[in-house]
Length: 418
Ligand SMILES: *Cc1c(COP(=O)(O)O)cnc(C)c1O
Image (cartoon, helix red, strand yellow):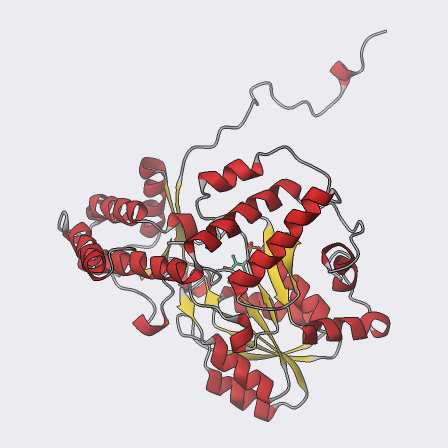
């Protein structure tokens, strides 16, 4: 009898072998580079998701997430999925059919929030601000006066598509004055800029592992207040959460405080990695992490401006970890994409493009987590100095590096410990 294996269809080409990724400098909107300690943690032997040793580590992750978010919320844990799962989980659990939800939109991710509200059967009341400007708390006040019965207010703290920071504290305070719960997207903000979940009264917050936490992609640390849990518990019989996977009533059976029963197979090795990245955040300290992002942004900004390039966002609303820089007007359409391709091919450096109305108009330089370093700032400024003249923009050799170096030297003499 001949083996059937040779006769099966869809055989892949014999040329396919093991995959060896090139080493990249990741300076886009995420993922960021992963620290060797985090990579090493993820390569440890796997184990069962109900193993008592693993469960002990889960409890540590929850404590570390509470620190990162600065919250006492018991329900602080990583969802199995990227930041988009954190977003979707917040909306499917907190929005019931017919609910009125104010979404503040000033970029791509606010737009996705609107989609989430509508798919959950809610009515989205959209408060728009221009891309590159922060969400305006006064417009929220007006929207809540004009619309009664709003149950939830949602906004993006750090809009990655434009590099803009919004005032999470002011927005949350206004939402609470009107009795609404707050959903805050902190995917890019967590660990990069100050975020005080309890002090600012944020009810539901989600992030992603691959931005300023510099962990492997695919996990979404979330934190939900008791008010959120009450809301989700109350809807159990009335209007079941339409997503089985994301229904917090069920997820709690694995990640909650008491029972530990099977819900889905946790991404064990990714959780090893998250534990290590959160331990590293604790070692560095949140405030020092914020200060490091600020310092390298200042140096990068000095270099960018010394080259004659300009930022999209006004200085007081800029994200240090996400730098949106205008493509020079002299660039013909398509030329900015050539520069990005050149940086990838010749410098192994990834930077981000503009999205939506900003496509072709900005570059996005990420300085997130482990990618946020002096080495990367200097490499990037050096690469731009070498390449911009190729595309018709004259740049003085060394000017950008000198400007960045001045920032570093000033910072070192002011505070030698950073
Ligand atoms: C990256 C990002 C997301 C989505 O996260 P994924 O991990 O890509 O699913 C959501 N919101 C913001 C602000 C982001 O930057």
